[in-house]
Image (tube, rainbow, N blue to C red; front, side, top):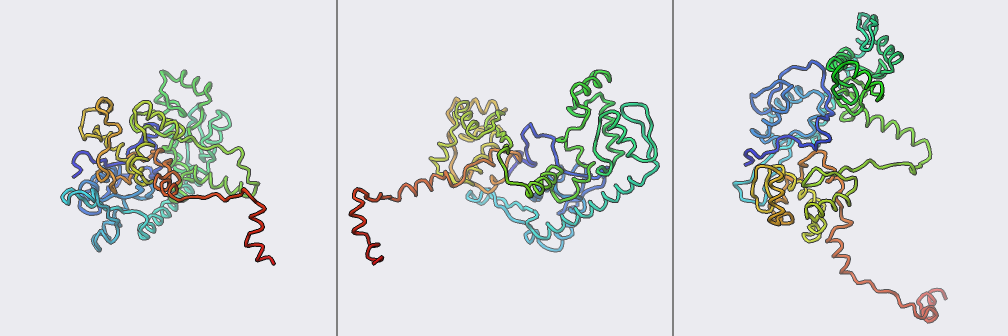
Length: 424
């Protein structure tokens, strides 16, 4: 039983907390019903409903943020689950598969690997796109628009494009072309509210008065929006075009299509920094070598040694990382299973007792539930080495004898070679 130690939602390292690619229609306020019972919550409490599904029904829905209309998605599966057993649709994952039967639990995974689920998600995406385009057309045709500029007292009426073009031209503040924007009124309301709260629109720092805020935005060139702020994504039509793709991904695809017509010159390509986070603290490094060195020097944890001694294959490495992260998240020493009040106390205990390199039996952590990342943005998982450095592969290759050819007398070899007979 998970008890109070369940991780009921994806954890996220601090540098990405708050980011979300989920797009929702402004003003959504309907209730969402559980697919397996009568429980319901407002759409704004979607996370609580997902926790309910895990705790009460052991059901996990994959990639929730990519579901265009969550309430309709849930209603569809609520109907289907009354018609057929849940096992007809969901993958079954058995936890603690090698442990005692009383500690084993079956979890159900509903994801778009099921064709029916994939079709449903695509249909909901298409319907949402149609609604967004209809809303955008209404805004284009709206001649009753009236609003005062956020930076001066000029009033604009007739069409939203007049105000947007004015702010871009006169105040060097552009939120994009009018035809690329949807829910424009709410967008402007959001921006005005931030300015009224004396908040910079780019870095979002709070200032003591409007004069200081204006000077800051002018001097720092912060009279613009931060493209990495996902809160603005719902106001741009490009984010509704393809299932599961943000404007950055769509834009990068457009760039690739343009580059295909040019020479394949990758000389100026630069890889995106890795930013892997230490297993034991918040230290980040841009290469795996640096993060491994840090863990060894700061925490006496030698991942390479464990991998070699235990002959860990790729997926075992992945499960080990997720296991260690989960145990430390629960403030528990993975060496002796002792639970303390804080993570810092656990780390101090592990160093003093020499438990950093002390792992429990393989069967304890080599379990299916540790396929799932403890932190959804864990770059450490994406950079684990595969079979090229697999100790088993190295051991097998070391057992194969290789004999060099005796080339001490090339003339003798030529005279006795079987090729001479074949060539006659």
